[in-house]
Length: 222
Image 1 (tube, rainbow, N blue to C red):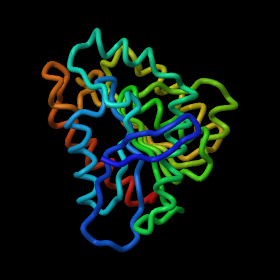
Image 2: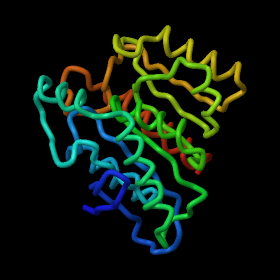
Image 3: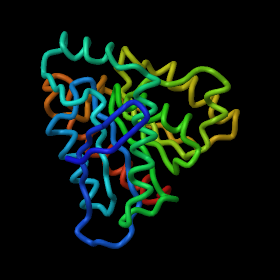
Image 4: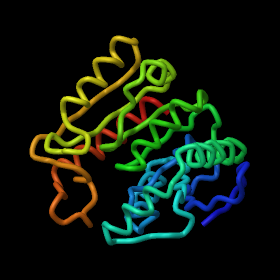
């Protein structure tokens, strides 16, 4: 675990690095509504094995749960403005590291974190790429105009929280604004289908394909 400062205080995060000490592209990873769980940390480690310095930011400041009611309360307690400030501070932390190429830093998140990964792309013009896994999508034209980083969006066709029609509407707006966007919607998959801890939702084939698409996108964008 590492700590870094933002305007409102100290932020914690889980840092995963490649063994090679030379400069690497970097990723700011943002967790689901469960918090900074072992699965999120394992995803950060997997990305590090693929050549990225990864900082998984803890927006819950040490709180983790496996109970949906508690996760809902934790999610509601997060101030969007504060979270954006903490993610921007994470960007600055990575950009100042000797093992990070500051021109090649991206964001990646799942569910709650997917929406925040996209918000960071809106509010941090230096961001070089963004991966959104079934996260909330902006609808305001002003926000879409600020999305200059290439974006990969991964969604499930059965997701009631982020339904297919809203995903396609977002894709249409991005294309109209001439933004770089790649959208994949998996049939038979719902929300949070990539995490094996979600026993009912987990779809291993779709999750494996989404992971390969993510690695390909990051290699091209970062």
